Image 1: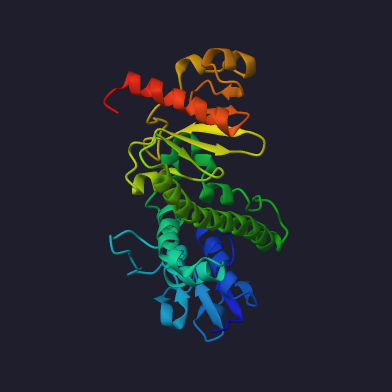
Image 2 (image 1 turned 135 degrees about the vertical axis):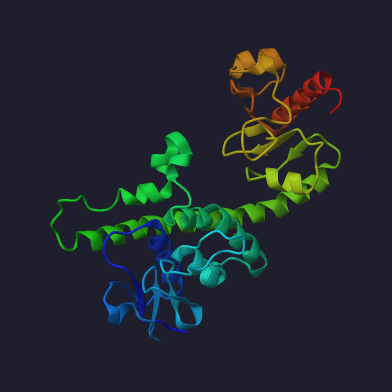
Amino acid sequence: MTKAFLVTHSGGFHADELLSSVILMRLFPEACIVRSRAPEWVMPAEDRIVYDVGGAYDAERGIFDHHQRGAPLRDDGQPYSSFGLVWKHFGRDYLLASGLPQEHVEAVHASFDESYVLPTDLVDNGALNPSSAGPLAALTLPVLLETLKPVFDDTDPEATDRAFHQALALVRSLVEAKIAGSAAKLRAEAMVTKAIQTAGQSRILELPFGMPFRSAIVKAGADHLLFVVHPRETDWCITTIRVADEGFEVRADLPAAWAGLNNAALEAVCGVPGATFCHNGRFVAAAKTQEAALAMAELAVREALSARPAL
């Protein structure tokens, strides 16, 4: 299937048609984006995909609007924007075109839908206000993209289209980075799972390098693990394991006596030659060598177990 045109509305732009454009441009790289409300453009035709304009939703005819009466809803009753509709019908093909392995497509599709697509749908439909983000409201993606619009007294007739394409380049980078990160997380899960099997009942998980590890630890039911050790560019890292994705509570802190110490001062307190750093928050420490990092982790385990014998 080839398309010559990707048609969305002219005038002010929003996150939903920008994000939709990113998805469609990957799948139809030769297509030209047309920003128009002219009837001859926003009506379905074989040579185009129409989105966020046109007053209809008909995937077979290639039109994906959500402003009309009887607009489509998700299975749970929440509204779609054009982005949600485009992602529903083209998201899996986009992921495959991005090089994602087939076995990871459904997981990444669902994850991206939850983290990027649904919030965009809700904001665009007025079902979610960015102000719910509190002090971070001005830094939410829909609000940031609004700031890229031309100022009200810019009289250049090309200003809005130029700003749209500038915003599009930014959004494309963000989407590609998010998808790449989700794919990497799945690759990391396989490596962490293997490392958990190797660790057995040890309280310390050693990894070949830094990577996302919490989700794999939770999926594996490895509740006994307390610390993770891995190499960095020039040293080794000892890190804690958070209890939940949100918040900062960890399964076990590093020893209180280490907090905020560096080099000789830390070596003197912990008794490990090569100890170089412990964050004042006691969630990460560093050492010059693998042996020193593992020795520090063992000390941290002992203190944690003595403080909480039920572990």
